[in-house]
Amino acid sequence: MNVQFELNGRLVQTEHEPGTTLMELLRSRELYSVKHGCDHGECGACTVLMDSKSVNACLILVHTVSGRKIETLESFSDHKTMHHIQDNFLHEGAAQCGYCTPGMILAVEALKREGGEIDEPGVRDALNGNLCRCTGYVKPVKAGLSTTKASRDKENAGGDS
Image 1 (tube, rainbow, N blue to C red):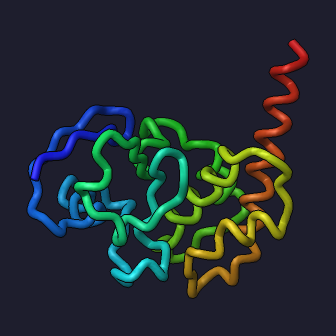
Image 2 (cartoon, rainbow, N blue to C red; image 1 turned 180 degrees about the vertical axis):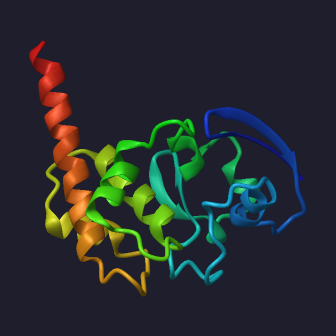
Image 3 (cartoon, rainbow, N blue to C red; image 1 turned 120 degrees about the vertical axis):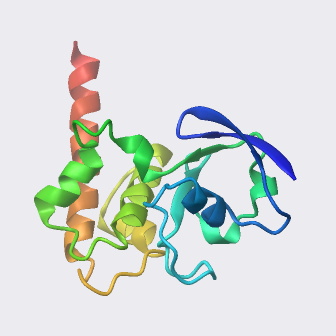
């Protein structure tokens, strides 16, 4: 099967076998922020953004992404500077083993893009689909709240000029 979609800002055309998941395709393209976890959409290790929404790539068949916009954590950095959400996770000590961290960062970004009021229950809800055995979620929630606060502060500063 042949599919064309946007991946991390670039148009991609790919040939794949029927039944191939988006996670399998992305891993074959060496996008290792997309982790192999449960294969059932329960752990969030394979989280990507599809049209700015947080989704589990293990549940998405490649043929369904035709014409869509897919983003992985690799699109967040130029390898010289960190994305502000990555920086907040680092500053808050929100990553321990790091396996779940890419999915959590993308979940926070999806929440930020949705707009609206961001509070602790909202961040906890956004992170709900990302299982973590190390952090206990306190620090990732703080990182999410810091991210949304920093984004609002930046937008307010830009709006005043």
